[in-house]
Length: 149
Image (tube, rainbow, N blue to C red; front, side, top):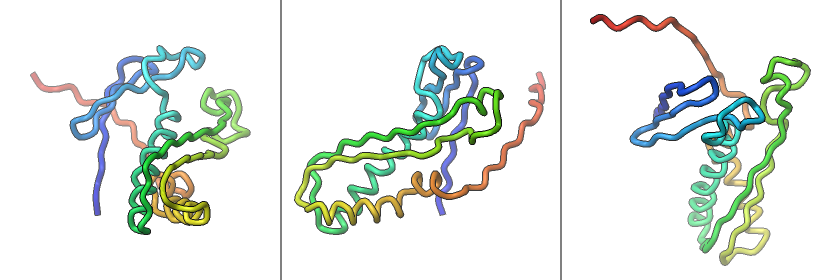
């Protein structure tokens, strides 16, 4: 079993610096959603995480099946209604209604083989699994204890 962890420090009401291992990145909202537009927003990172995971898994599955891929280009998109996020309506869910991924590859596989690689990759991609199936999330907010001097 592997455990992954990320930590974060708020830089503003919408901005956040996230760290994982030795990497650091910014999260912010676009100006239209009240942010400073200093980085992708959380739901854009979800799309990027999905594409990153699929890149790894598609290449892995292709290799396992004896397929050589010489290029990989992907786009993920999804629509969400910001009303719940903004506290204006609770009729729709807060997250994406659906996500569509389009991957274009070059390599030595025919379309039937690419369809099978897509099917297997969707099943084995941890990010796709987290998005497609309920994952328990537990959130706690606690008062920070002041450091002793």
